[in-house]
Every structure is written in structure tokens, then in C-alpha cells.
Length: 215
Image (cartoon, rainbow, N blue to C red):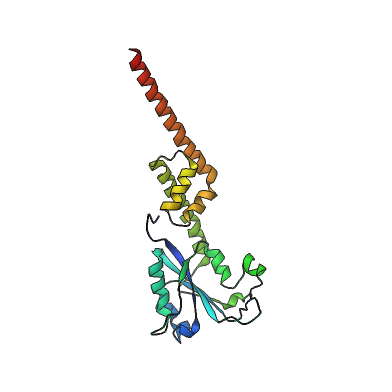
């Protein structure tokens, strides 16, 4: 959770332009990034008018822990040629499998948009990039995020699901609301439980006050 702060993520993707990258970036990328990576050079993309789009490279990098946009940009920038900037921005990756498939345009949306489908062999990985391991870690991370949200709900004693969801949007990173939606019935029951507990406590207090008035 990044409360009132900059969003953090473990997986980041950037689009870089070869003309602004180090001439030998493909040979040195492992040493430059020093992190697991996967990339695909898009040199056959076409726009809506079937004209060739500027060549570019989609690159995923994997950090050992969640990190900020600023730090991710710093790492990607190591591939830039001296005095140049190879990318304008990078983005956090919500689903590592989806982005891994998107590297070669092997996703449902890419197919509908009739984007160029690249051969899986054109997807290059290095520094022990392991998509299978990351997917499993992703499952564990989601469980940890759910537990974090549960603790937040109990600590703040939310009695209404809508108020809880609104607080998550305000105080948590962008991926957390998706966890709430995925387990909406679960969190609704927890909020309902908080409400019933509060209601019983209030009724007990009222009974105590009524008893005092009767003496």
C-alpha cells in the first residue's frame, strides 16, 4: 500500500525507440539493467492506414520488490544513448502474463485490432526472467493484498461496503480496488459483520442507560 504517496509496482513496461538507444543495447542490456527482462522489437507494426509505424521496443523489467515510477524510469534510461532519452514514460504492469503475451501482440485485444503478431522467438528474455514463477508470485501477492485490505477494514471499523471501497480508492495503489471487486461479497460480509457488532454494542449501551434510569 502506498498511502497518500507514489504508486509502487514490481513489474514495469516501457516503450523505447532504437534511434535513441545505445547502439549495442541488445548486447549490453543484461549488464545495463541488472534485472530480469523481456522485450520484443516491433519493426512490423502498421497504423490504421496500413503505413509502417516507427520501430520501437517493448521491454518488461522485474524488480525484486515493488518500486516507484521514478526508479523504474531510472533503470530504463540506462538503455538510452548518451545525451538522448529513449523513452518518455513507463507504466506499471497489472498482469505479468498479459503484458508478456502483449510483447508479441498475442492478446485478445491485439487480435481484434489486427495488430502484427510476432513470432514467440522474437520475444527475448534475460537475467533469469521466469514468467511461470512470476505468475505464481502474483497469486501470492494478491492473497497478501487481500489480507492487507482485511486488516484495513477491521482497523478502521468500516460498517458499509461503499465507504470501504471509497477509502481504498483514495488511500491505496491502483491495483487494490481490483482486489476489492474480485472479493466484493467477502468484503461486504466483513463490513456487515462490523455493522452488526457495532449495533449490538450500541444496544447494550442503551440497555445499560435504561437500567440506570429505572433505578
